[in-house]
Structures are given as structure tokens and as C-alpha cells.
Amino acid sequence: PGKHFAGIDASILGSELPGILMVNATLLHTGAQAEKEAVDAIDREIRRLREEPVEQAELDRCINRIESDHLFAMINPLEKAQAMAKEEYHGETYEEISSRYHAVTPAIIRDTAASVLAPEHRSMLVYRPQ
Image (cartoon, rainbow, N blue to C red):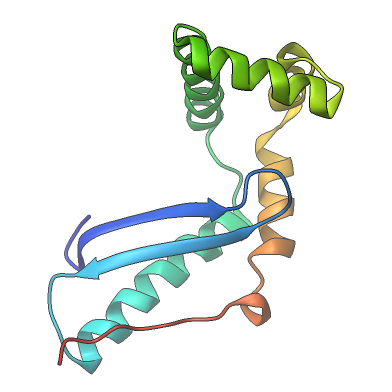
């Protein structure tokens, strides 16, 4: 997490339709200056995603994680049934979906980040201790 955060992560709310990218962070320090420094650090990372392609190795790790998660899910009968139902519902197999992941390039991620992570699209909510 570094010098600003006790913890930080990002997730997308919604898995079937385009969702909201949510960044959650717990700060190491309190106060307006700590909040400003934390927001600036997040903004720097978002700016990097918008301007620079990710490393191919990082993209490969993500794709491998998606495939690994899918394979391990197939061990559990309930998750396997859910995956089969999802394939039927969407009219496409996991292999078809997987091929789209493999078609993603660092440049595509950068270009998508440039449009999706535009500063004018951001909303921020700060929870402070009482």
C-alpha cells in the first residue's frame, strides 16, 4: 500500500453490464493533508493508466488469473452449473469469451482507460472518523 494507504483496492460493481469502477482506500493518517496526498497518489496512478500502456507481463498475469479462476470454479458442481447456465444465457462459450481476453493489448487498455477514467467522470465520497 505504500506511505499513504493502510489498504487500497479497486473493483467493478456489476458483472453482466458495464458497471462502476470503485477505488476503496483506507488511509494511514487522518486530516485534510493526508486525504489530499492520497487522492493525488490515486490520480497519478489513474493518469499513468490513461497515458502509458501496461506491461505485457502484467496483462498476461491478469489473463492467466481469469483462466485459473475459471478452471478452479469448474471443480465445484454448483459453480460449474452456473457457468454452463451463463454460457447458455449469453449464447457463447467460455472459450469464445477467453479469446476476447487474449485479443486485449496494452494499447487497448490505455485507450479504454483514457476514455473511461476521464476526470470529468469521477465522483468521490470520503468517510471521515467522527
